[in-house]
Image 1 (cartoon, one colour):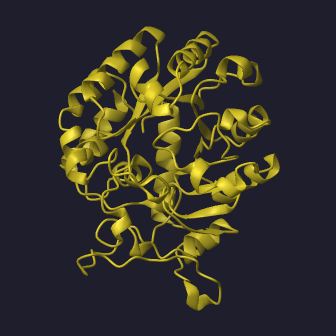
Image 2 (image 1 turned 45 degrees about the vertical axis):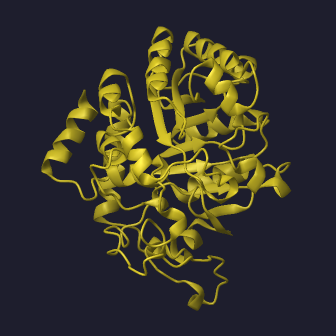
Length: 368
């Protein structure tokens, strides 16, 4: 994803430092033989073939922390599995001090506050303030319906974005979130936040039935509010919401995004050009799930934001006891059609499998 120049420089320094001198305690592969209880249930690949080891398997470090202070939500979106997967803990919240401890423990320079609906977290203002005090960058992922009433709890900061979920124009979006009027409330939230001096971007999930011309229409509609950017990702049929009527295969994702580069050049799309090319089938990146670790009411969630095979008490346990080499397309069938940004955007941003021309393209995109 794209950031302002100062943030980009800080991220570049962080990535360079960790690539040159990766923290050794995160590179161990302990597994069940270490004496701990490894909860991970690996599914054998359909073909029996194993891909080459991940090029960064010995250079693991986080880039974006997915922090879920709660899983409660005021909506029941069709493509969201959190309220179903965590039904037994839906009323629980991660205490403020524990959220900030996870930020410190992980050390990722970017924190995506998600959920659930994080604007329902009683201490959301204090949480964002505490993360900013630690000089982290924040994307607060929200459906936008609580922005107007809780806006006074926040202060504008160049390291802070409201990230408002919009899956299309009014009729389509309200259908996706299963409630009428949500689109209008979200747009009012966008307008209020921009008027108060906040940075706002949008996050869009693309389903099998999504009309990409409507996504372009959405981005054009949002121009009038001076929205700062757009994030986009194909929907993925993970276990909690594995309904193949709305999710796509890799081939279908490639076809869906075939013309998206034109849109990405026209509007402030925050996905890297290499990730956009990956969605079109022009690049082959390995999944770098450890780059986007998730922390929630049950602890550190593994192996990734979408697949839950276990939870760990500490970040180091997540990094060292997760059998990373057993996940990803070609290794575990549950990963076969996944192309979501939380797994593959880190690989694109890190330039894995990228050539000189790709690196020059990334530099030009960063500076434009």
